[in-house]
Amino acid sequence: MVEQQQTVFIDGQELSITNWEKVLWPETGYTKGDLIRYYSLAAPYLLAHLRDRPLTVTRYPHGIGGKSFYQKNCPQYAPAFVETVTVKGDQPNKTINYILAQNRPTLVWLANQACIELHPWLSLHSRSQYPDWLVFDLDPAEGCDFDDAREIAFLVKKALDELGLLSYPKLSGATGIHIYVPIKPKYAYQVTSGFVGSVGRILEAVYPAKITTERLVKNRTGRVYIDHLQNLLGKTLAAPYSPRPRPQAPISTPVTWQELGRVYPHQFHLGNILERLQNTPDLFAPVLGPGQSLDKALLDIGVTVT
Image 1 (cartoon, rainbow, N blue to C red):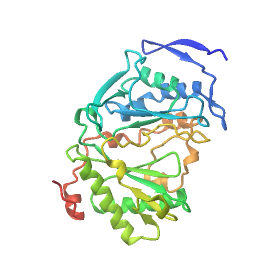
Image 2 (spheres, one colour):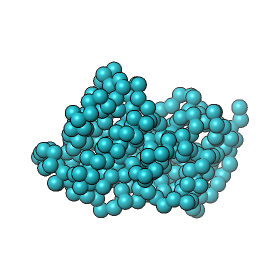
Image 3 (cartoon, rainbow, N blue to C red):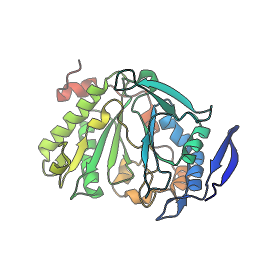
């Protein structure tokens, strides 16, 4: 098969695009060209939540039904406009050259690499040890579904309200829900993970039939898992507005708390997300603000900061 190639200019940068018509989502027929168009037009939304954050991507060169792989290290063939940051790895003398999604050409280049999922860190690379977001990752186990995750999301919101913390939900794009809490970047990952874990255990004690913090998947059946471990250094979640490798090409979409009461993940997808973005401001803009203090909330639930 002959590889089709075309040169385009994005914000003054020259890119070589291959196989525009390659189908990445067979069930819907969405192509690499559709992904490129989305990343280009949604760049103001995507870049706001990716910029200055080490990025892990998931690539699907043969579409979502084919073999995929995670990529942390920026490949040597990346164009000069792709910025990177070097981070120490978890093994001695090992470093990772992470991509930074700083501009629209980088997003288009990533789309051409069939990067369907974008996973940024919860912290900026300039203060990598101190996240400015913490996240409640609600994952319905076997025997549960999105409706169960929705029910638990509102319980989490109530707990956070009582702790004096504003929170912002987004659909994971699969069956789960991510609840973001913007915080001041002065708490170590162990503290923010401990906070989410403590709130999760409190809710689990009150609603043991519906909520679990159990790490073993086989022991979660019929309950919604509150995953606090996603708040550890280097862990990532699908970014706001990231596509997901599922049949209907859903987008991990921020919603209001009012919307969360009536929406489902399949409603926001590659075919209609741009229309939503044209008509809806960035609902996650507050997550990019100065952040909230956790001091009182930590004290209220008995988490010790060391």
